[in-house]
Image (cartoon, rainbow, N blue to C red):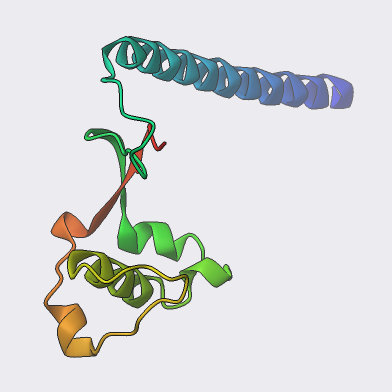
Length: 125
């Protein structure tokens, strides 16, 4: 009976793992299918353009939730103030030199991140 119980447990564990793998592969395949249809619809951009970012984003993340998943990552330290500093510099037309400017808390408060979301784009050239 001992061998039977441990064998059944191993089988159930493997079945659960296989189910996760199948689900992940199906999700990946659907994303690739969506990306393939989007590839055909993309507009051509000029090689002289400094960069091109897709207008549409299919994946979004709640900023607070995303940062809470990275508690010990250096990226998470002061991420939102740094993001706002970067965005304020671009919005105000200040040329990026590699060093970020620091804005005051009052200036940062003027910039509101809609729905507290950050978006992942499929295209960045």
